[in-house]
Image 1 (cartoon, rainbow, N blue to C red):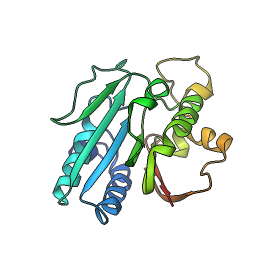
Image 2 (image 1 turned 135 degrees about the horizontal axis):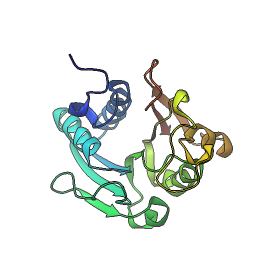
Image 3 (image 1 turned 60 degrees about the vertical axis):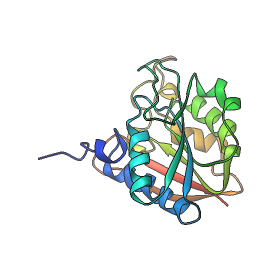
Length: 196
């Protein structure tokens, strides 16, 4: 019997409820165009990228995938042929990616400062009708764990929601789209905002 976290078939190391949000955003884009242009910040081993590709192709579309990762926790390799991969920290690499994404999935460093920088640097790269999706937004996982760099204080743990509060996110031109997280778990959670 598998548990709720055995979900590598859909979108890598995320819960089914996280995959529901990712799938819903892909479906919305596929209603208006056949190719989804997607940037994943924090691609780790590429498992989520493979999930996006599988879902989009199963729904008759194609994926123009861009992935970014500093390569601190794993070697950064293209998850599949044709994928664009950038090795480096997102705050230093934003100028290396195009300005016309349908979806940007923010799943890199979850500390308050990193989430603020990723939002400022990447939200303008999402097309109208596109999505900015944040991972690890479950209220129960905020201020838990610590990122691979920085002091061991709550702001350098998972602090996505604190970052939103400081930025007064979502900004004008953005609207809440969907959020899901496992109710009896202190992990994961995915929240999507749509550019209008």
